[in-house]
Amino acid sequence: MNKQKIINFLGIATKASKIITGTELVGNAVAGGKAKLVLVSLDISERSLKDIVNKTDYYQVPMYQVLTDEEIMLATGKNRKLIAITDVGIAKKFKELIN
Image (cartoon, rainbow, N blue to C red; front, side, top):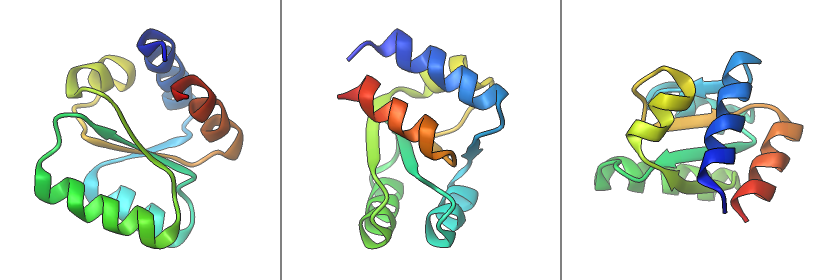
């Protein structure tokens, strides 16, 4: 796993408007079927992590914890802990980069 490639690709996904950020919006995207993959910060609180794990498990959306808050902010320009990828092709590429 090359974190720099993941950060760079997240920046591209952000510029292409293929992400949703923020706890409530990501939760709604997962429940609504828009989220194809969820990226969770390594620095997220236990309660928030439990909530998003429960939601992604229930709706069968892949979830990964690979970046810190700082790395997410570097890629997106936003201080966020949760990101949903809304494009199937971009989600597939993220899976390849992470695995």
